[in-house]
Image (cartoon, rainbow, N blue to C red; front, top):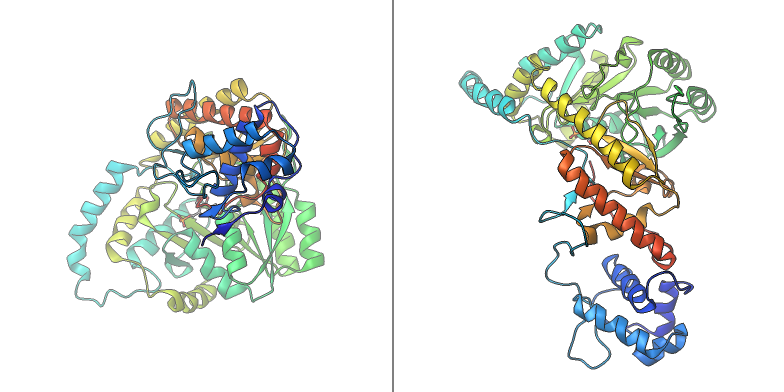
Length: 485
Ligand SMILES: Cc1ncc(COP(=O)(O)O)c(C=O)c1O
């Protein structure tokens, strides 16, 4: 596309101009650059002439000239075409150096909350799986419900946790996200309501919307130091009784993003209310094994056979296994299999054989993994307290992430600025419905302490830049979609 942007259109995008603490030319250059990166100023359009823009903004022509020069220097404006340069993106996309920050090459990824493989354990499981493969090669290789050895291993794991389970209650899936899609397409029709924790896991919200359903958010209460109310069960009961959601998708085990765990008393109350109101409870246990403090709770399925549980090896072992499951009543499993075969005809066999070995010795990699997570969590908590004392940080009981309340609604603005400081973030509104959580940011503690230190330094620098420029905060209201996990 090519064309030109008139001064009035650009001024509308810039919003009311109030000088901040930065020199005006830098602020103007920053805002235009971020509007280009955000896609709100298209590529290959000519910006207004310096004179016209200066007049419309009520700034001096020297200020606009300096802003355009800075944009050219950074590669966001073409050169050599007189004063009316055209918007472009620089070829080199690495992080711009931030003074005083030891940021390694490439972006530190704080948008994903995931760990590398429990390498040796996973590798060995694959090597062993290959020795079992010949016995299965005479078969067709299609098994929409899952390889029996894995279904049995998963069922035995539930039984060992106090929830007697047989293999016909297990459907093996390609991860928890696949599992949720199968459940949604089986249990919830178009326009049906699905109760969700608010905030919740962004990809679950996307799956709910993609299934044509409407997420029905129930706020998690604000938890202060020393309080123990993790979920607002009364609010959930009211919503179930008044709005009759077809299902509820909850993450009671080290909730993503807050890291909370639901106590048994609340589990019992919740299940009783869901059964009474006819809402199917679907609980995502993907993070249940990431229990660094050894908190004891029962799986939600211990309280009623009507609960549908979703699990995965992605966080306990490795997301690259793409192996998860659904545990439900056998009659429901039959319906889930019918839905599954509209999407795919089964999972890859070697992965499932490896997964069966991993599930049989489930705890093997966890000691080391939890030790690292404890260290990372403490490190992140103290770095945040030291460098971002104005952020209110909820201490996670487990899982992989810290949910932070920011002093101003600037989560999207921080996220858009973040790559400039060498980090990638997922903005708070990704975790909510209707633009909520602009006041929040999820920060994972999956990186080792040295990298967390760089990451928090980068967050501080990005926050300082925003604090110095109310103009930037106002301009950056909408996040570009980004992959998160
Ligand atoms: C709560 C929750 N559910 C599901 C997933 C995705 O799991 P999988 O990789 O098994 O699809 C994640 C990943 O971050 C998650 O946090």
